[in-house]
Length: 372
Ligand SMILES: C[S@@+](CC[C@H](N)C(=O)[O-])C[C@H]1O[C@@H](n2cnc3c(N)ncnc32)[C@H](O)[C@@H]1O
Ligand code: SF4
Image (cartoon, rainbow, N blue to C red):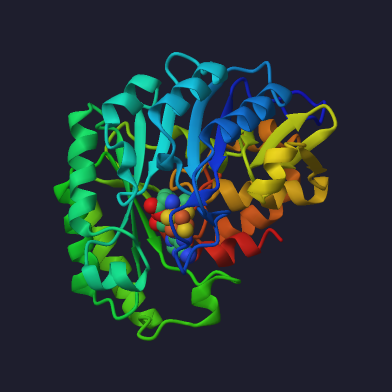
């Protein structure tokens, strides 16, 4: 370990590209997504993204690209081809695009594949028509199944399905039936999120009736975790489950406090610079971003770096090794050592690496709060 007290910039970086429009805003969603009014100016947005990318160009190789939203699949394969040519990611880069099963204007996934996309994340949420209705989704379970068939036949077998649980009036059996629906589509990865009521969303303003209580949510979780494991989906992060070799490299980079550039309306980035670790952001209103892609930078207060690191790394089931803390934060381990020792004594943290025990993982929020 050197003692320069400077974080080591990671060799490679990830790139997040935000697409801020959706056909309609879902009532639970607090992502930077705006209902599309009128026609989509694909070329105009692509110009802005390419300008943004050129200004934020890093000399470090980009080995993961994540096109998220909003609904990136509203954009054509030709637009992705143009964008990915400009990005010039490494040959073995993981390149993900989020797709909404209800917006398959461009249902030819082969064309997306040819453009350079090699991983799809499909927002299924549920297969139960009543749940899809409460969630304000614009598609049916059958449309999700159709999208999955098209994705497989385009050779994009590295795909993820997003599901949510803890939905209004949902039973344990209903939540498991949703998982069974996902298994039938044979995805390489499943993201299984508990519905959260995010401030300023329609659900926070008018709380839906019939939300399961904590005991039922715990039962759903217990049964779901067991079913996912039996199906061969290994949990590697709080909400992420993958078949062997299909964990999301892009997301692991976030959780292990790696560097990434974020371009597009409202996109966030994190970079290790000679001035310290900085967070970057862009205007979130698409109208403003289209005019001006200027980046804002905020240096993370060195006193907060340790807890930020822990909030991310401890979400990973395997955690990270001790050395990684020093490399990414530039801080000596002593700044967290006492709290780690305490958590190790209580059986919540492992002693061989920065990782939680299964007991600690069940109390993740409380454990992370110890570092505040
Ligand atoms: C940006 S969206 C993904 C793609 C696409 N926009 C769609 O909805 O089909 C990311 C995922 O986060 C999850 N999500 C969004 N809001 C959530 C909330 N309030 N609680 C839990 N999960 C949520 C959903 O599973 C969603 O698919
Ligand atoms: S489609 Fe996805 S990003 Fe758009 S509003 Fe719904 S959950 Fe949010």
